[in-house]
Image (cartoon, rainbow, N blue to C red):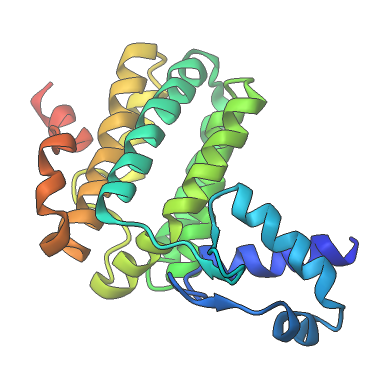
Length: 231
């Protein structure tokens, strides 16, 4: 790993974890000193993060962590719904017993990590990555990961504030129960509702005052578990 890659990984991890919050200044000299490298590779890493939307560089050339408005967050989740719904649709008929067993093991680890938001988020990402890898669409998976990282700070804030990693009725176990049945349409719908419910939790409970105007664009649907009960 070269100096630029080291700086990039350092900055991205702290931005997505929320350690460097929105509007926090990013000073190449200080970051380089902390990493034991010159400021030039830090500047290159900042430019890469700007291209990915994590950093904003103003007219004064000063870099800050990108601030997302409630409307921005809603839009990111809506794009995630479209892409992750497609991934679930393609993965569902390809899932085999080995895949399901592996995903089930991750769910058990998630349950044990319910009081550790950072570990829970890491396992959550692993669950979704392993599911989507079955779809056999690596470019799609790359885009999903990028978008998920953009929303991760807000999910972490929600979990840390309310200490509830799973939205009631939208648990990953219920989601897997639907997807493992192999129906592409059911898998797509279940995944869309799963992400939409999480988005509503983040936007309307954590940012409810500012986000009220976005409500018509992101409506909660019948939860996965509620649909299962109605069958």
